Image 1 (cartoon, rainbow, N blue to C red):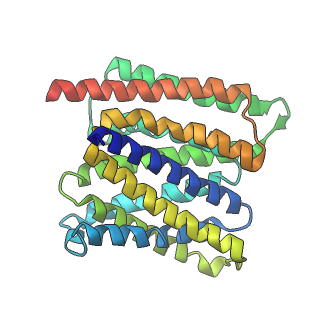
Image 2 (cartoon, rainbow, N blue to C red; image 1 turned 90 degrees about the vertical axis):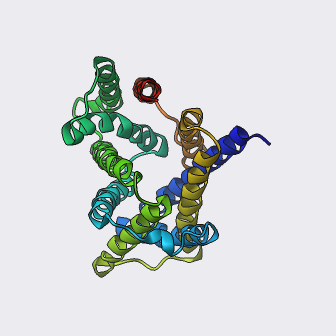
Length: 295
């Protein structure tokens, strides 16, 4: 079995487990507050993460850090992104939430310019424009005269917030990854989200039945396993070879909506998807060319 095949298989597996996690959260979205789902997703993700760190010899030695401030910033923005993401699933189909999430790398271009002062070429600005054009295509049909789908617009707003805060978190991760253990970055994030979710307990958590409890626990285990598989995939194959398989999540999301919620995307979803996917791939290709020039 070739190294690339292992890497691609792990990346596809990670995408499947991430889709399972989102599916479980979507099933619970109308019955449980966001803080409760964030708690279970994060707390039970710690189990596979700790086991993985132990097996790789990074627990507890790999948890040492000289940059606690960087971890705080990454965890803060990442945690806000998770809350916004889970909240959006109450209002949006999984496929729509997924396609909006693809805006994160596009927003990273803007934020890298604003926060890090990185130069942004004209062609990358074209990618940004296409990304936001896709958002307009997705939203405008919901503004049909007086019949405005306010719930959908709330979901889009939350999804956009998720993409924005994810972009900021990615910039922080980019900086942390230069000196910090990848497992430590993931573990501190899971711990932070666990505590943040637990902090909402005084606002009232309903008691789940057995099926709901399995879904809550399953979301955490699936999320943790997905993160480990994604991390391992980069040890076997180059990021550029794995990037294409990330977009399988959109296909899995469409099938999840259809089979579990009987939702069929409208024409605007496919048009918006083309715009946003083009923008995302365009930005990724420009990043790849930039990397080749600097090596």
